[in-house]
Length: 395
Image (cartoon, rainbow, N blue to C red; front, side, top):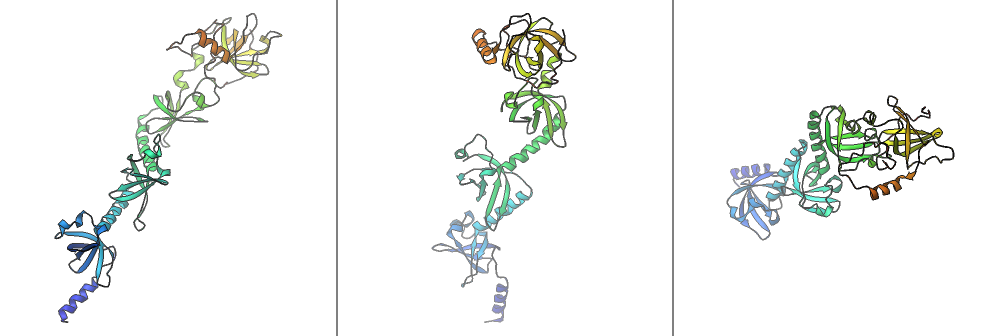
């Protein structure tokens, strides 16, 4: 062996390839289960048929292409290389950058599998756990072909694992929209918004990517046991913004402020000696409280119930006479004396109304009808009583 040949061999083996090296290849021959290629003009390489992609077609036998060393050298100093593995590695490197930048990706669900769904990103299989999918109103079997935005939750090149998160992508997008929306809102604005959900303490509405809260105390002037008795999910309501915390992205609204204080609206509707009908909404040792309209409650004191007459029960609709009005103190006194009285349950009264009254498309249910023995406001919502008192209203 000549000195030159020895030096060439020495250099060659000093430049041995290792796994994950990127190399330049050229096809030499087609074999039974793959292709023989030249690697970096120094080594022989073998590409299994399953590792061929478009860069390794037979039409490109004289063209150079890139591949990744996946094993070797074997006893014949031959390396196994793969264009497909190189593309996969490049795909993971691209996804790693996407993950670092926390950028959302658009993907299409290709298959529903146990525990979630399967998608492909540039030929790479990725898994989308069911707990990270938020497709309300769409059943699991209909997830296929749904295009969604996702964030990369977990990435592991060695394990060939890609975990995606749809829910987080939605939350981040919503956060961005909320930041824009809250800058457009001002205290005092009246907005229309759909109800997102109803809780014990109030109602959340969608202000355009930003959730606004209507506290239970601001839902209605009338009494109610739970906010779901006043509004329902999906209903579009009108409310006034009364507080904005831009730093915390919190907005508080009120339906009551849009409707206006009922006590300020009835000063011309109530007069002493008028007959009014209303529903008994609470009982106290000294009498009962009657709702004349949402937010307007009056006291029927025990002393104004004739002797021998049964005290009306909660839920009944009664007709009484106004004997005292104090708008400043927000008090109305009622009496059973000197009137013909008919007490009926709210349910019976409502049935009678349905039988005797034709519906009015644009009726104002908040208006108060005076001197009407048949008047019933049983169908109106109830409200919290402020300032219950045992004080008897004097004539």
